Length: 287
Image 1 (cartoon, one colour):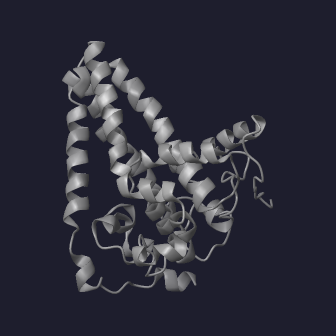
Image 2: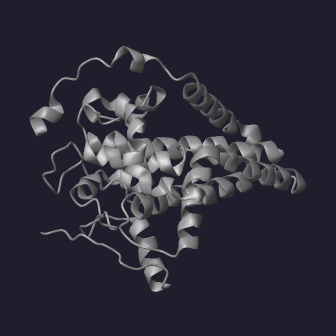
Image 3: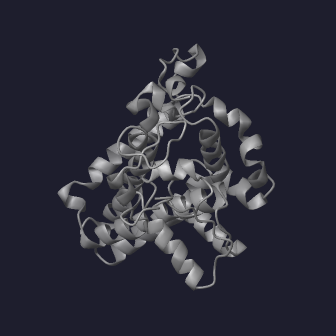
């Protein structure tokens, strides 16, 4: 299987080589605005705080909510808490929760094979972000991979209107920035908390698809290229222990060795102590 994973890839089908104008334009716009946010005129301690708080909420929403809770059902929480966590994850604007979960489950089934949508066998740039700028054939099978979510009106609505979540957030930040006379005003706060945050979260998430299939060590001999990469784990709250995750996808804990720091797992443990989660599945390192 490893030899098949490393085999040269055929060229993409002709219809898949064309860039998607909507996604590409959105990504270019977000990166340009993120660069603008770093201009001295928009710096403020309030902007840094807004970025930090929303980075924590967004990354945790992706890792704990969309990934470990919904995609893998590695633990259970009350319905209201699942909704909150999924909304937090959807603030990452990485498509809606139905598409996100479908693509992630598809990735696990076909990891690093030619039909994996971010197949690491096509190179680091493709697995990092280029894959999403083209047609994604895996989405044709999303009912197969996330049919459980498609039966829930909450997920259906959120999947369709996920980008709208940025509007009330932006309006609130703009109002506060002007009312509190923050350096850079409301525009500065919005730039730090939305495009700059989104771009940083995008690349952190994408590193799990790219870097952790190229750099690091392996605790388990999985039939793919997954690796444990400590610096991705730090940035992504524990998702960088990717080889562990591919070996035990149903485990709520990804950092299995004493030095594998897993911030998301710490939050799950906190939820346990608060009595807000149950049936937590946990793999253990055999060494």
